[in-house]
Length: 156
Image 1 (cartoon, rainbow, N blue to C red):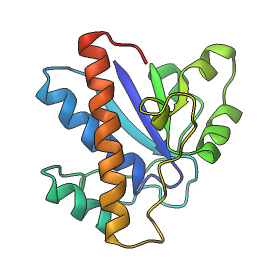
Image 2 (image 1 turned 90 degrees about the horizontal axis):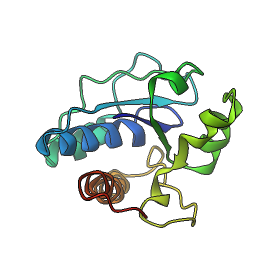
Image 3 (image 1 turned 180 degrees about the vertical axis):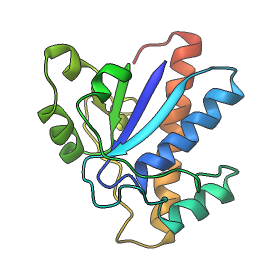
């Protein structure tokens, strides 16, 4: 399975989600390809935010080697599922879709945990370290749900 995590700048939420899901997939013997991207290009080539790196490291996951990149339409061809962090990311990704099949791959990540509620993973960028801890908790829970659903075949 190929999964793409998308947020605004690809330096906070989406690299955290990439790191969490990559670790969970590996620990469960799944050879998935997990990547992340941002809808904006401001941080292309940069490492994740230092606070994201710190919170992830405290949870045994190293995302420091990751580099930000911008979402492109070709990502629809490479990924089976594209999870976005908020409604703004959703609209930006959908705008680049070329056909109905592309749109079907995109969903708000928290719809896995809260079906149909269209909840956002809050952007911690302008916040404090505890905001990153909160984001880690949300993403850790939803990434575990992704793994459990795949392994046990449970649908929402």
